[in-house]
Amino acid sequence: MGTPLSCQPLSAPPMAQNQKVAVVGASLGGLASANVLFQLGFTVHVYERGDSTFENRGHGLGFVDVGLWQKLRGARMLRRGTQASRAQGAFYYGDLWRFLYEGLPDGTVRFGHTVEDLGDVMRPTIGDEAYDMVVVADGGWSVLRRYVTTSQPQYAGYVVYRCEIDADDVPGFADFGIFKNGIFDTIVLPLTTDSGRNSIVCGAFIATPEAEVRTPEAGTSRHGAAEAKEHRGNSVPDWFLPLYREKFGVQARGELERLMEAILAKGKVSPHPQFEYAADSVTAGRVVVVGDAAHMASPRTASGAHTAVLDAIALREAFAATAGIDDALKRYSRDGVLRAQELFKRSREVSQDFVPAEGMTAIVSPATLVKAR
Image 1 (cartoon, one colour):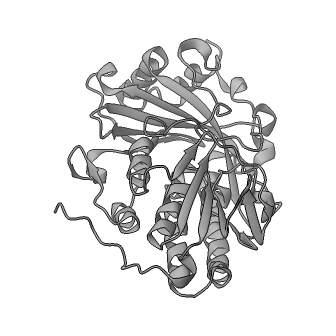
Image 2 (image 1 turned 180 degrees about the vertical axis):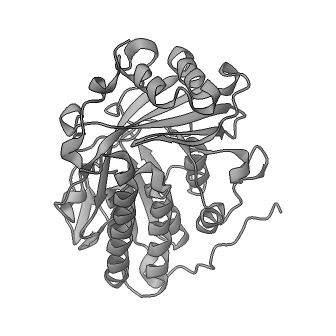
């Protein structure tokens, strides 16, 4: 079992010899694509505006197709020394990030580099360095997507309050699952990290008028300084805990209320307005967009990171089937758009559960829903 799994056997195609590819963005989508391109024999440089690695960042992912990730990387995925599986709890973003990062040679990722210009899409450049192809993986609020399409994400009508707390701070809690009250929804999962930390993560899905959310600026990252800040204690909106109590206090014998009270006292909460997106084009010249830059979806699809990995595997298949970069990107393009559109369609279906049946115009401020006591 110690022998690395073999990916689909890869022999470097002729076009990869002495050719350089840049990947902009070192989150999961960018690193997945970088792994594939490195396996194909390209010289790969990954540009990441963040100053440091991501293994200690992020939230939990409820669904990870471990076999697919292992196929992409060509190595076993372990958690705490044993084969990774969903039975161990939700997957920690940082562990998944490290799994992909370790598939690349030292120095591949260039931290602290912000890229805002690519020059000519047929002969892209970053700074003074010319590349044969650029993979844009700089997130849902991509700065570089404009080279491929002008389309933008749209607000889905609700905010997910992501919460996390050490399991030891909520002794005896075991009521994991999905709980609903009308359009209000909360999901609670155990989270285990490879480092040995045991946590509880949850999300509260709350319909919120678009006027009460801030649309992120171009370049906003899931993990950068511009991300929605984490809140502790009474710095969450005043209505949040009373509304959570009203909607979920009687469920699970009061355990959900106990959990949220503990989170606000000892854990952390971060609000994430939900936006959805499907690119109408994923390639232009020798530039290709992948991951969140090509598609954004509700976390309840459990398919965002999964689709980013599918993007990377599709790139590998496209390059393995042809003899040139231009032909490979043309082959990738149609299915890439279709993959984004299918995820968007699924996300829109899921999101209808979290907004009024009458639509976005019927959403009211959650602050007005708390009953006076």
